[in-house]
Amino acid sequence: MADLEKIKKEYSDLLNQLSDPGLISDWEKLEELTKKKVSLEKILDKQNELEEIINKIEENRSILNSQEDIELASLAETEIIQLKAKQTNLEEEIKKLLSDEESNYPRAILMEIRAGTGGDEAAFFAVDLFKMYSKYATTQNWEMKTLESRLNDIGGFKEVIFELKGPDVYPKMINEAGVHRVQRIPTTEKAGRIHTSTASVAVLIKPKKTELKITPADLRVDTYRASGPGGQYINKRDSAVRITHLPTGIVVTSQTERNQLQNKENAMSILGARILEKKEAESAESLGGKRRIQIGGAKRSEKIRTYNYPQDRITDHRIKKSFHNLESVMDGKMDIITQALMEATE
Image (cartoon, rainbow, N blue to C red):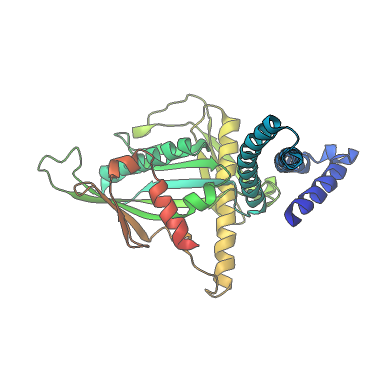
């Protein structure tokens, strides 16, 4: 297989790079190469296992062809069937690993949910969306980390920003970008009227450390006391962090952690993603609209989906398709929607 020969050569070259003593001073490159080494070794280990199985199949065929021992031939025939099943499974696993290796999809994204129109109900809907994505992330074995959140006085989200990491996180979540609309009777509604509220979702790519060079001279870092809903202090120390990127004017904050250094790290993750988003937007604009627009290119202002509780229906307006079992989807069982959107963009 040409792909595997390429992998073997890449692995050999990578081992040569890792043997360079000078690499110890460049920890970012060392970390990147080490992760790549682990990824390639998974493929090569599976390939070695596959070759062993193929050799065993050939040995059993030799026994069958010799026809010297009927009982032994019967055992060989049974083992060939079992080995072929293993061969098929391994070939599929290798194919998937090669596909993942060749994929240019980012493996880490930031998602930002903001309450839109609808007051407290919009903030509660933002909480519901956050829970839906959190539960879906668990089913996908993705890593999740909350970087920043702002609550209103009654426990709804004004804004929440979180990071997701996983091999297929980008293609499955990029299509969530846009305005989500909910139609339901709020718990505070005494007359039983259906209200319409919105929340916006942004999906940002988390840049690798080598992709963006942000120098300390370009930053203004301020610290302040973290506060909770209504403005009361939840930390007596200046643990919250606000970072201003002077060249672009982008301002980010983080106060989710009690540790100032951790909040600064969270804020830098948000800042890097927003700088990259700004650069990509400027690049797309300079192309004069020639860039191919996919479903995943939804703008923050574009209404993409409606969650209608009275009718137990979710409608994605981009592909003009409706889904039922709304409560199940809100409980994290989103595959029915993510798969439909991925197929529509292929």
